[in-house]
Length: 298
Image (cartoon, rainbow, N blue to C red):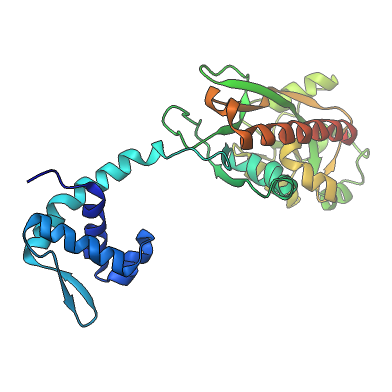
């Protein structure tokens, strides 16, 4: 017997698993008559019946069940293996970003890009992991933080990250106002990276002997400041919306530059992707606006 094409086998597996030709046809983007015709052709080619009709659908025959058990797992494995190699569509754009960057910086701006480019289907993946463009072929670009030294990819700087002491209005009121006392006398939220020591060195003051609490998570750090628990040495990109809305108040005109910056990272293949090129231009414009705005906050 000549080799059986994979598509009719895949369609049979779908129909047998769903137990309903109408639902199977819908999932395969076929008409019921076209699917039935394929099943008859496959049965004729194999020499035995695969599906038997029942009052409420179809059921695999004993021979069909054996074929399903033998072929189904292999087709699943093929589909899984081919998933990263899906055909590229110039109107589909997939970008990866850190969750904090996605929710606090990219998503609030994304509406303007989608409105300007309605023909582009934009997919955002939030992940702490570095994107492996050689394996994740569906991903076109990533927004990451670091020194910009990643091999095998293009890395374009977006903006630096800065830190500034920030507190809730309720804490500022309890302390008598922003300038009522030296910052070292405020309840400071410590961090394990020693950034406060860098801050006090920058302003020429001594760091406090102890902190009101040590928090090693950026989200918890900003949340504690928002709740009036203490003063965070907050990241301005993460806290921009909170600062703009007055939910947090910058306590000093001095800013501390972090050891890393924000970057747009992408593989060479994306250089010819029309959707990505439009996104890159838009992103750099947004980054310039952000950097200019940050300069006015402190």
